[in-house]
Amino acid sequence: MSVFRFAIVDDQRVIEPTGQPVEDRDQAIAVAKRLAIDLAETRQEYLGRGCFVSVIGNDAREIHRESIDSAEKSS
Image 1 (cartoon, one colour):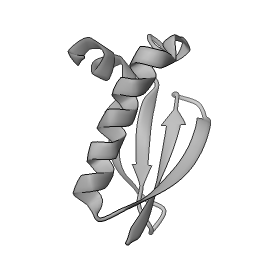
Image 2: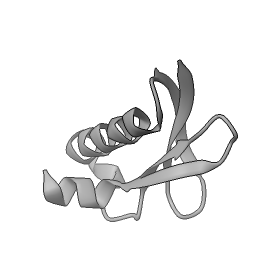
Image 3: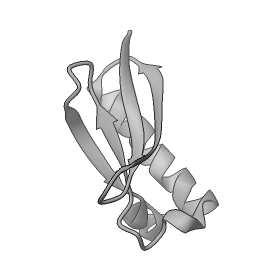
Image 4: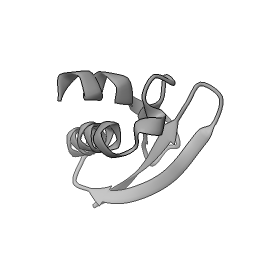
């Protein structure tokens, strides 16, 4: 099982890094989407600041960004 890192990021820095074991890249992106929706609902301080959930693969490259502002609008 792969481990992808998820980080809450604004335009200047990583705010909260975390990791979670997932099956593959598609599952990691789905986790990021759910995390962005949860953050939009429960952590209002992230809204309107351009924050997003970054998914970082085993090779330390970012593979996906999920906007917290967009998740809030679509929920």
